[in-house]
Amino acid sequence: MKITSYLYQGQPGWGVASEAGVLPLQSAQYPTLLSALQAGKLDEIAATPVSTNAVPLDAIEFLPVIPVPGKIFCVGHNYEAHRIETQRDPTQHPLLFMRVAESQTAHRQPILMPAESTQLDYEGEIAVVIGKAGRRIREADAWNYVAGYSAYNDGSVRDWQKHTLQFTAGKNFSGTGSFGPWMVTRGEIADGEELTLETRLNGQVMQHTTTASMIFSIPVLIEYISSFTSLQPGDVIVTGTPGGVGVKRTPPVWMKPGDEVEIEVSKVGVLFNTIAADATRF
Image 1 (tube, one colour):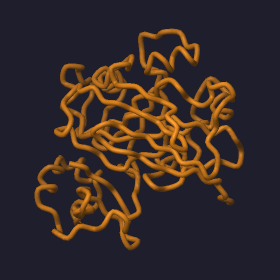
Image 2: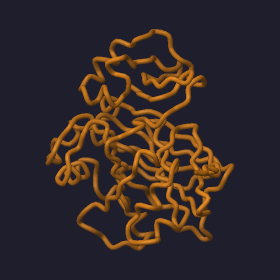
Image 3: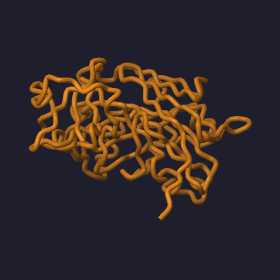
């Protein structure tokens, strides 16, 4: 199944997406995808849609797949080509940093270039949504904790990222991390199946790889992260970007207002965003 979160006529909803539209699944008891995951009821709810009338895809405003995750873990330098282009030494452990929910945007929504920088970079990634709670999860059991997969553009404000050795500032500007368009449930993709990941900027291929090139696999990441914190339903692991990022090109390639960027993950779909200047003032 493809499960998406959205606004329709100003009201939030979630449901099963197809070419025919979205079959709504929200109810008073389970108003969000997150609430269904927390209850362990996603499959049961999806089997009985609240309506048989699909909402057309062009009538909805997509939201991030999980609009307000409890935790968003991002993995740095998890593809060998990207590790090499960034001149990072090999490591025995994943490099992790966190995103906050406010930094997210959605499919067909603009990624925002902050007024404080012109160095907005793309990072195509595969996102894993956690389906049930766990702590100290063994690698051999990790797939059982996966609810599904999505695409993610871990948009990076490079100069702010380089202010210190910590990535937090450059990874958390509002509206820079795009998540969607939906979550493809685990049963649609075989555990460990090789997936293709591609990033296109204004139609030009900038990144192309497969999950076979990951340094730390999804089960290894789940085991590692759950060793120091509990994973909860709806938590998100953004599994790393491959080589070809804009900052390492000669000359560097930055996203700018008016650009279009696509992240395509095989068996998941295409996450599409335009770039717009962030005119927010407080």
